[in-house]
Length: 279
Ligand code: ZN
Image 1 (cartoon, protein in one colour):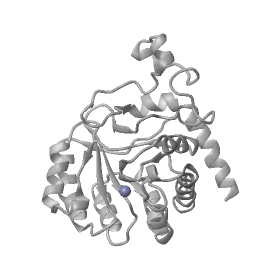
Image 2 (image 1 turned 135 degrees about the vertical axis):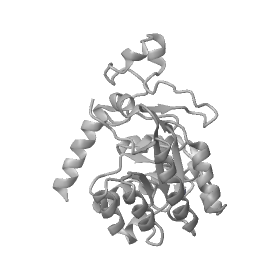
Image 3 (image 1 turned 90 degrees about the horizontal axis):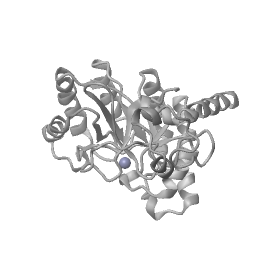
């Protein structure tokens, strides 16, 4: 375990050092104000960048130091002021995300569908769910899915003290590491309720904040057809889709995926996961 943690930590530093490159390479945009402001903004452009304007092609080649908000811990991701909402990439790339699990009633079916079409997705898991279903995290690792941190017990972070937020996030990263084999590189605040402490602590733990572009609202049980229609209507290059594989009765989400995934693929979408890449 210690050896593994050391390796993970070293990897985290290597990844963090490439944070600016990652924003370009993995093609992540910060849009900041929600889906109505879909135009991309330069993730590394902070006040200093404003004083010393650089060509868009140039700033991606600059080292992290001196550009954008300073990392709270050297070598780790920058402290963002808003979550990432979409990904960029060449062509029709989309990301599917499933929150609140894993749940043995629904997650295996979702994994089966993803496997059937050889597609990778992101699972923002809650630590307390992982504790009871470690085998599902092992399966996610085996099948190449990306696991993100969605806190331990899914609280509203904006109502918690900083010390409590830290416990929620850190405990979850620990159990993900134990069950999945790596510490998460992404986190998502429950209910999409972010605050500065969450951004700071997430960065300290080596994670980037990822929100979503299209909300299926599957938790309202609108019917599998409606969920599938929301994904199809929202489909566009760079879109991140939010669904749930736990937190309630999710059979509609399971059925919807069986419908919309083959249709997205038939429409030419490359359904994939964002990866942090070395510069
Ligand atoms: Zn959630």
